[in-house]
Length: 402
Image (cartoon, rainbow, N blue to C red; front, side):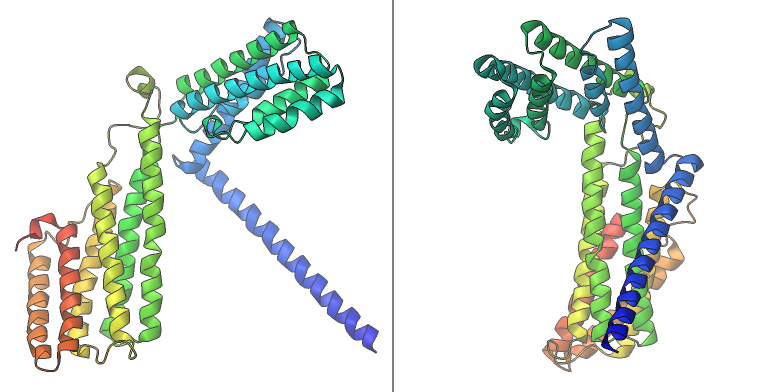
């Protein structure tokens, strides 16, 4: 009887693992399909990845044709190998990576040749050279290319050709592959990463607006408690991940513009003169900080163990209306960054601005009312009003000083 039960349990576990495996395969297949459709549909990260992959394959093929077919070099394998890995995300990184890799290959070939000459034995040469080169590969000057010193040594020793002529052939082919890889990356649709900056800026503004709108809905509907407040705070904290992605994209865009000025930049298929200024990153970063601070203050106000009394629900309802307008402004900012048709910034619209001023006045009156009911309630509401004002000022610089 026990064996039957155990067998049934084992069967169920196996079925569960198979179901999870099938779901994982289905999810991966759907992801691949979505990426392929996105690459066909229009410009984007997926198409950029496709272009860079095809360029790497083209660089390897060209290097092989030049080295093997045209030059008929017996060490032709080195050229396509180097060319393949040098089609990097930017032209600048291709040059830096190429220099590091070529230095590592030179050192690996020379050390392997010396070890073979000293030991006159394949195993002994490997034992003598590879540990030293693997240790040397951790030198920061090599970046992530240091391992090529050890792999070059293995190939050199295993091939049995460690003469001066053979080493010269390997280094010459490595240089040829580096030149072809860098040239293909620079001259054929040179990668210029500007789109990611704009998309991340717009996504940051839109997601901040969604958080504000969600908080506003909870406050208007009276569904605000400690658990809801913590959930909204966690959503606001996730904006930091988007801000980090924006900073990374800005770094890539800055690097991609190096060494691609003038004629090279004209070879790129996307416009390169519409990159949002870096001041926009700082402004959106401040907005993200205000949203996070605002939701944190609301979470404290909703926590009975940390706040003796939360503001009046009617006052919070008015505050929710204000946050809804600020959320609309964030979404309008996202549309502007993407170059979409602007329905008009709510904060610049006279009617909307008047409504915001009325809400602000109501909040000020509520603040005065709360002052008579205790310092704690006054402090919480005052903090909320101040953070909303800061957010308003960064969303609409014209509102400063009003």
